[in-house]
Structures are given as C-alpha cells and as structure tokens.
Length: 481
Image (cartoon, one colour):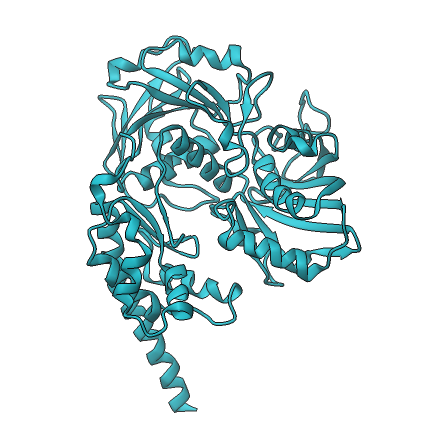
C-alpha cells in the first residue's frame, strides 16, 4: 500500500513540474507571437499549474484514454522552436492526433507539418487594433471589460479605451466602480491589478488605461478628445434597442459602430456567433448580439435541425434572477417580477423562442417558449422539448452533439458534459454559449428533450467579444484543422 501511495504522489509531483515548466512557454507564445494555446478549448493562458492539469483531466470525458501533460509538453516545445505568426493552437488536440496518427514520426516534425500555414508571420492579415468603448458598466459591461483586458496581451486586437457611465454619483464614484471590477461575488477576483487615476478619471487594469466618461446622453460624447477613433461602442444599458436609439452613438465623433447586448428591435440584425455571423457586412454600423438565452439555444438547435429536422418544440428556460427583478416585494411594471427574486420562482415571458427565427429562419413559427426565474445569481438552463422529423436514440443524438463540441463549426459555442453529478455552479465562468448535459437527454422515438446549461453572464459576454473580433477583422487561423 505504501508503494502504491508513493507511486501516485510521485506521478502527481511529476505532472505538477511539467505543468509549471509549460507556463513560461505558454506566455511567451502568447505575448511574442500572439499564439493562443488551449487544451480541448480550455484556456491555459494566465492559468495556474492546477488549472492546466485540470484542463488535461477534462479530456477523459471526451476520449476513452485520458490526456497527460507529458503528451502536450513535447508539442509545446516543438511550437517554441518555430517562428509562428498569430494563431489559435489546441495543443491537446494536436497531442491526441499525434498519439493516433504519428506512426513513429518525430513529434517536432509532426507539429511543424500540422501548423505549416502559421509559419510565415509576415503573411498574417490581422487587422490593426480596434478601439472599444463600453457604454454602461453593469454585469455584462464589467465582464466584457475583464475579457478584453485579459486578451490585451496577445496583440491587443481589441483595445478597451473607455467606459461611459451616468453623471453624478458619490464623491468616490470612480473608486467604487473600480472596486466592482476588482471583486465579483459570482465570478471571483479580477486576475491582475487595478489602480485608479482620479485626477484624469481613469482606471488602469493590467496596464490598460481605461478612460471613465460621465454622460447621460449618448449623443454628447466627443471620443476623439480622448484619442479614440473609429470605435465600436458596446451599449450594455438596454435602454436603446432600435436603429433610431442606437444610432445616437454614431453621431458622436470617434464612433463608427454600435453593438447592443440585448435583442435588437426593428431592422437591427440579431447575431448569434457561429450560426448567422455571415450576415455581418462591412456596411453594418448597428448590430445586436441577441440575448443570452438565444445564444444558448440556437447553436444546439442548429445542430439538431441540420441532422434530423425539427417539426416543432417548446423551450423552457430556468433562468437566474437579474437586476430587472426586485430584491424584495415592490412595484414592478412587469407581471410577477415585482415579487422577491431571492425568495421565489417567478414565471415570466422570454422572447428567445421567437428570436430563434432571426438566426435560423427555417425554425420560424415552430417553437414556443417561456421562462422561470429562480433564486440563483448566475447560470441558467434551457430545456428543449423537440419533435424531430425522424426517430433517434439517446446514444445517437448525444454522440452527434459531442462531436459538434469537439470538431464542428460550432465548437466555440457548444460544450458537452456527461457527468451525473454536475450542478449549476459548476458552469460559472464557462466561455461557451451552451453546455449540453448528456446524462439528462431523453428520447422517445422522434421526441427528444435536451438540457442545456449556460452561464448567462460570462458565456454570453464571450459571444459578444467573438462578435467584436469579427467586426474588427480579427480572424486567426486555428490548428489542428
């Protein structure tokens, strides 16, 4: 027993040592070459030793054989020896591909051939940095700030230049806003350092100088006086949702585009990244990133509809409470939302089912929807009760959704979990739009029920950032292909 105990401990120590030695290589590839590395979609940049080992451990849910850091370390070493241009490289998938297809080939030669298209940095067509302004600094605004700041070290394709908040507030308003960025009850502490420049009304986060602008009117801000030009303004307030309202931002000097982090009204395009982002054109100046629920359900619905066809269905969302509800019973213009969010399950409406048709016109009129707000602060679930055009099995539909999460065009949007023990808090901080809970899938002939988790704050914010990258012309090659 003692020998077995020693063996397991030594194996762990060896994995820790390898993961620790990977950290400077991961950082150098990112900061000097703008190469973002991951393990089966799990970020490993600016992560701890334990985070890196856990990213490898996750692979056991997707493959019969687990993935060890001893397999990805040689891949990372091989990448370090190459003169790479900007790219997104999944070292986990490369390691598994080498395991299955290497056939005695030297790992360095294998890796070089796999990333051959990234070996000429001068051929990169990455667009120059794009200025980003956050109009509103609430839940989504602060999470967008965190993501943009986190990504600033790898070429700064998107630069967070300013946030705009309402006039007035306490004398220490700036300090309070910086504190809300620094500490979050749901998402934890900010990864880095934050300081306040009160004299110049700015926040400095991980070296990013962010101007804080006070204004009650989106038409009255001159961004050029802060050195901001051709910017994308991300409106997180939800106050203006049509072209006329959002168009106010475009009247400001220094602004070229406006993005809404809520469902758009009228002719505003509602974009779900990975599904209908091909609708974005160079002429678009106002766009909507739709809602968190729409982003969660549309990718899964697309996969299912493309494979089996959806005759009709109902979408029920079990959604965490939001700022739109009352903490304790009080007047609210909406039905039932005046009752205490922390004490009640509240039946309310959702426009997500109807919004599906804007991203997937072929499903127009086929879905109904409703929502139940529940006393949790974050992470929600969509229950998709669907009638398909053909009969399927649990194993078949789960296998297809698993494959979509691994190698399909929606792999950045769809995640997959098959643990019988997961609960909502396990998905706080998920960067995916939706996570399929395979253990909960129900099938009876052509009827199926899918349970889809989503971090309605962070996962949605990641989708918004993907949209900003698309608008800014940020299109990195990904490997393995």
